[in-house]
Length: 305
View 1 (spheres, helix red, strand yellow):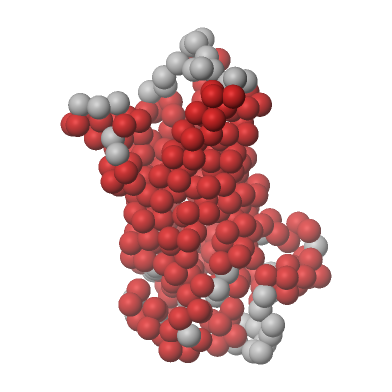
View 2 (tube, rainbow, N blue to C red; view 1 turned 30 degrees about the horizontal axis):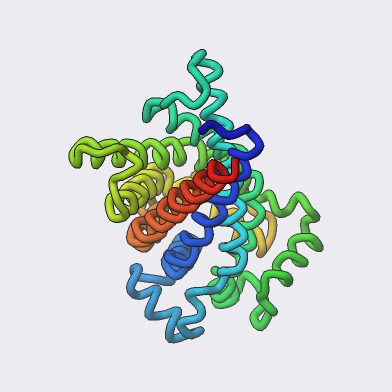
């Protein structure tokens, strides 16, 4: 049964919240390692060295620094993303003159995801800035870029941004966030739908009935494609958001060229290993929670009508 646009938006938003929460709970330590290695690549020889060093110096809890803003980021991003994704699919159908609720191709769904990510970028950028600064605070102090012994909580970071840069300070890195999101989410949704379709064809089932493991693998595959495609852009974004705490940071193009000139191309891929390890459980959990909660809510609305 077709639902009204308002009901469908509520379902998509709520399912996105469930998916975003599951994603953070499964992948936070790997995300912390990624940000540390992106921002201070010379401090860590690799993913394992980063894990061991952080655990020794600040305890295992150091890998969970930034969990609250990470939850804020993931929940707000995925709520807006999946709600916008539904609207963007309807917009694609309208442009193509298709019936409301008709199936879109994988490419059309991927394009819908790209456009939806432009809306989610507006909520992602401020929360990611807070998250990245918290995750890299130990390295900022160790490198002398900020005074040591500073109180590092979510609210202290927020107050500092407001004091130094004002409300617009939360949007440092917005350009690189949008540059990352548009192609990234084309790969994300395209990879997810393509992988799901291949499983469905191999198993002789509908895409909605392929089971938990294929569904989670499809989510992980989409996430892996996203990060492989846009990882250098994400590295530049992290640098801008973290190092701007120590003073005025260059823009996207200048930061990108500075990294290439001073550190080489491989610095743009620092932290890729924990990111790819994280992406399968984290994005698998995201899509599993999204699909299961969405089906449940749609069934509840159908029953009540």
